[in-house]
Amino acid sequence: MTTAGKALLSMLSEELTPMVKRTVGNPQIASNLGQRFVAGFHQLNRFQFGLFRIGSLGLLHGLFTSWRTFTSSSLPSPLSRVKTRGAEFSDRAIAALEREARSGITEHELIAIVEGAYLGLGGKTHIHYIATTPMQNPSVSVPAQLQSHRVLEKGDVLITEISAHYHGYPGQILRPFAIGTPPTPQYQRMYDVAAEVFNRIAAVIRDGATIDAVLDAGEYIHSSGFTICDDLLHGFGGGYLPPILRTRRTSERPPQPFTFHENMTVVIQPNVITEDEHMGVQVGELVRVTRTGVESLHRYPLQFTQCG
Image 1 (cartoon, rainbow, N blue to C red):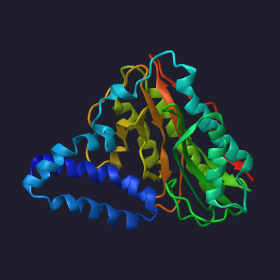
Image 2 (image 1 turned 120 degrees about the vertical axis):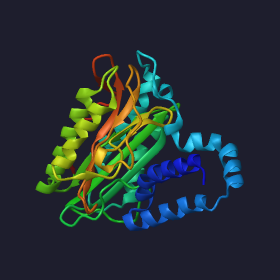
Image 3 (image 1 turned 90 degrees about the horizontal axis):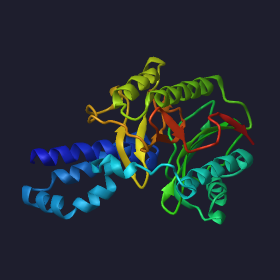
């Protein structure tokens, strides 16, 4: 296979791994599925691969948006109300979970709560990833794309990634909830690490900043005894955009150089998990890069909420 083909396979493998883990929920199954997907590309001969590369370029640009330039994740300033209502609707969904999430309902009912917060106001769903697990015996570390009939119980943790949009302009917010009891000490510590990393990253991004400072901030996760599964930060606004960053220790290859510019929009979202991937939280939200720092597009507090 050509060098270009190998480069494509490497990119596909790296970008699919978090996606498949979220969809399946089982790291071993996810790994097997990812290997099978990538193995299919290895079966292409040079001619077939050439046809695939030419004929599917537009599709790949849509699916693997790290090929796009950063400019498509920029928003004019000042931001109009239309461009910020997606964040407002996403906040409404998180606030609705705070009011209504409780033991005795299913994960599917949680999704009805989420969508009920904005559909009647003209909002649409971009994504709503959630997962629940007992805090005393956890088995899930990242919000899942597919929900189950699992019934919430007192002592559960609910981890979320919610993104509603309005006329194509999305928000994105990630918060954990403790059901019926305060967070356990282990979960509280994990949340504290995630919130600290969020604040450290937010403190170093500004117009002209590079990703090196973001990666330096992410090292606090590892020095605290944890790791990550999902992205640390990604561009967002009309798509899933560069820079798509994990920590240095969890990246398969060094990231491409990248400089932040004013009015870019990015999601800071540290997903702090244990090494065995049985336990995790995710914290973050969509922010706009300014000349001197970042401006959050969300108003819901950065907190580990007890509800139900």
